[in-house]
Structures are given as C-alpha cells and as structure tokens.
Image (cartoon, rainbow, N blue to C red; front, side, top):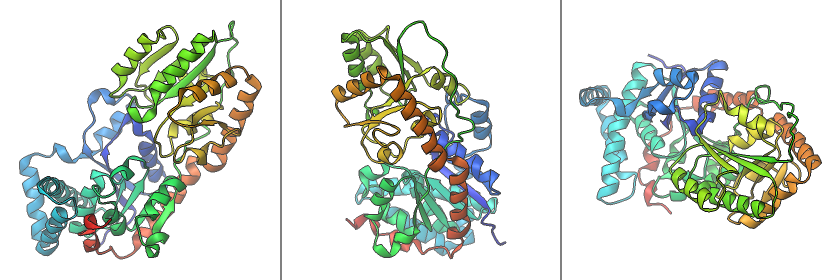
Length: 424
C-alpha cells in the first residue's frame, strides 16, 4: 500500500505540554494547511497539566508510547520482524551502536529500540507517510530507529538550546544526517546544526521561525490607575535556565530605591519552592507574586495588566512568550543570548542586557518604569516586528511546504548514523 505524504505523524517527548504551546499550534496549523496530523508522544502528561479544553482534547487523540502494555509491545515487535527481518535486525544494530559506548549507552539503545518498534508499528497501522519530530532529543532517537524499521522519511524541528548541550551523547550528527529535513527556529539554531554537518548537507537545513497569531494577541487599552505603580510580567518555566533569581534581586534593588512596582511570575517548574523562599528572604512578598501555571485561555489577562515584559534568561532558543508579549504591545527586557537578538533588537523593540547580572536588569526596569513614552514606542515596534516576521499563518505555510516537498524524496539510508556517536 502506497503512503501519502499528507498523512503525517508528529512526535515529541511530551504532548501536549504547558511550556510547549508552540507545538500544539504547529499541530493545529499543519491540519489547517491540509495535512492529516496524528500526534504521538513518548510520555503522557499528568491530568493536572491539561489546563484547557483544547489540551484535554489533544491528549485524548494522542498515542502514548510508554502507555503500551508488555503484550502490545511484544506483538508490535513481532509484526515488525515479520514484515522485514532484515530491516528489523538492522534497526536493532543501529539502536545499540548509535549512542555512547558502554553498558549505559547500550541499555539506552535497547530502551529506544523497544519504543521504536511500537512507534514503527503504529505508523504502519495508520498508513503514515512521514514522521515529523520536535526537538533532537531522546524522542528523535526513537523516531530515527522507527523510521529505519518502517522505511519512513522523517524530519526534525530543532529549537535549542538544550539539544546542543550534549551533541555527542544525543548523537546529533547521526540524527541530522539521517533526516530528510532539519528545520530550525532561528539563525542561531541553524548555525549550531551547520557546525555538526558537512557543507554538502547544508541545503537541507532550513530556518522556519515559530510564530503567533497577532489577531488573537492584540493590545488592549490600559485601564486608568490611581497610582504610579509599574507592573512587570514574566512568563516562564520556573527553572534555572530562566535566570529568575536575578529578577528577584533586581526587584529588591527597585524596592530599595522606593520605586513603586509589582512583578508577576506566571509558570511552574522545579525551582518554584526555591524562588518563593528567595522572594520572602528578600522581603518581596508584597511586591512579587508567583501565580503558577496558567492555561492559554487565561494568559492574556496577565499580558493586559502588565506594562513591561521581563525575561532574564541564560539560555533560549526563540521564546514564544516574547512574541506573545510583543504582539500585545508590551516592551521587552531580555538578555543578549542565542536567538533572542533576532527577535528583539536593543533599543528598537525592547532593551537587551548582558545575562547573569542583576544590576543592568534593575537599571533597564527602572528606565522603562520612568519613561511611558519609550514603553509605547518599543511596544509599537515590537508588534510590527511580530506581524512582519513572526506571523504564524505565514510561517506554518513555509513549514508545510518543506514537509510536502523535502520529505518526498527517497528515504535516506540511515546506516550513515550508526557510528555517528564516535565522531567529534
């Protein structure tokens, strides 16, 4: 039976995920362009993470690999072996040799092989024509092995920066070599992929930026206030890479200078307890509020109440929350790391500061607090930037065109990546 490239499986490690709304948008957007998109996830989210009706609906339609019982796993592998013993055994050899040497790497290869057999069987039962995976992490390892067994083309959507922290351990060279298309969200991200591949493979490395719908995220008139309090907003996962302790120290500096302000942190994560303790230790309980995770159906309330958006991150691909804030007409304060300067130009759409330093962060926060005209100027330019370059409708069309044509070629011979983990 011939397979249609329009029937696509989209795989990620966790779907749907609160901190990865951009993937849900991608799924829905690809469906709108004419693809039949079936979602697959390695892990299943907790019920309390499904904050919206849309998330619950997507979860109900998603195939979860780790939810398979032992009998289902055994039957999936038996069917794969029966269809093509040579490809099945080659997939096994591929799995155990494509990762770090040693017992630990060998065991991880076995786990990936077990999951890949389930994925390959699922794609064949649904007559999937191609596999598209977000992030070049463990999920991409499973996808690469599954596509070898099922003889499927696959593409990788690379976001960064986490993927580039362990290029050798994640076998990025092997994954990028085996993929029909490698689609990066920023020029910075593309540069990190290019350095891992030979010049001959560069043409398949594309940049398609994430985006948001500026008709959904629109500025709202600010309500009249009786005080001069400046309201700062940060939407982020509460994790070390976001630099949030610096934001709290900057808030303490503002408090010491008697500047009236409120700062709201939206999001959840492993550092929440630490951040709450630091906030209280700095005497900021009356000025800084941690509200936890918020669904997309409520997030705009917080954008509408804010005057300035702050993200003092240490490592970032291209944050969707910055696009949302810019579309809402908010001026941005962020750091000069990775892909952020592609989105926010210092002095044009926001203020960019060096990372890992609370003093320039506090200075930028004070500057925007004291200059409403500058806030309006930066906010206006930010919305124009999003409309021009980060419009979801335009960018999802570019992604669809790549998936339609680039993965239509003959499936690459994945054996090139078997010894990729041994390369520098």
